[in-house]
Image (cartoon, rainbow, N blue to C red; front, side):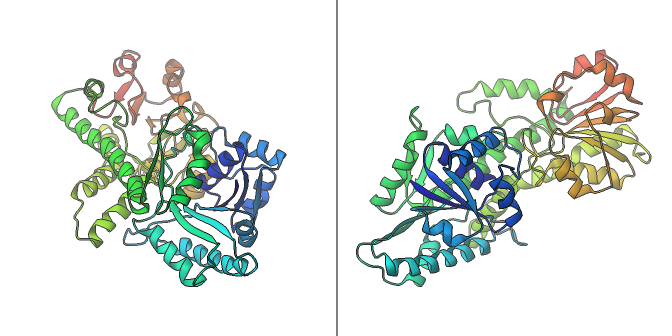
Length: 446
């Protein structure tokens, strides 16, 4: 198929590259000329495992191309995927201004095109995370500009929410758990099924529903996953007070088939571009429709509180005296295998430590360039994880990168001024570190 992808962020770039990798002709469009110039050379603006290889391969064979011209992207495609930013507005609602500006421009292009081609066929697919009812609004806007179309033309709008985990996005796209398609007619369903057939040959279902239900699926999934994490964080905090070990609790309840083991890891809170934004938007959707989403609100509030709790542990250990204390931070991105710093717990933790007068030296395998944009010269950045520990009064592990899991503890102890570890992801065994002479603090652990 001939596909255009409008927007080359995480979702757009992965979507375009993966569709090209299955034999489709894909053109990715973005208004950022500097980004597009680099992408044409195979230089990616994000870190995502496996993506650079796919982009370069499909660029080389001509199945993937990049442009800054919306008209070029629209004219060359049968399917137009909208992968556009929907940032939160001041009141938490999703800001759809970018989406509708693009939609109006697409409609104007289609209006010009349909005059010369009355058999025009275009399916516009909303892949951005948008409030329920947005696909209907997109269709209304398009047809308000197009007016009545020729009998032989086909123009429609579908919803196709993404479920990509940063750090595993390529794998998630190529081997999805399920594909959700929101359509309102049989022809759009046929096109979307044909498009996704190569991705579900292992038996994953294609779930077809109306556009509003499809849009709701995305918000519901993110809210539920965030709820599991926040719930375990609350249980972890109670475990600390009662002398129980949340790791033992987590493992035990995970064997219950009604619960399962995933997304039950307590820590310093969740971040990223999806959970915070989508929960705010869901809360706002509820308020607009007279539904008070109390659980969703609590999930968000618990997470905001959780980001600061490890700082309270640090304050307590040092009796509130952090001035001139050197704190080492391992991990800056909101999760491993990405350089994304959006809503990362590390930002809250570091800012709180700086307020208390501590100095901070941080290390992350890939996120330091993005972290420098946030912190500038307020903190120092180490070349590797051990350099960050030199003369440190404590280590705070924030992001559970694989290389942090089995470090040389004896070397760490020799580097640090005082061997204190605040394990924000519970990746170390408390008894092991204590046996080596460390003071150890976890989340909800004995």
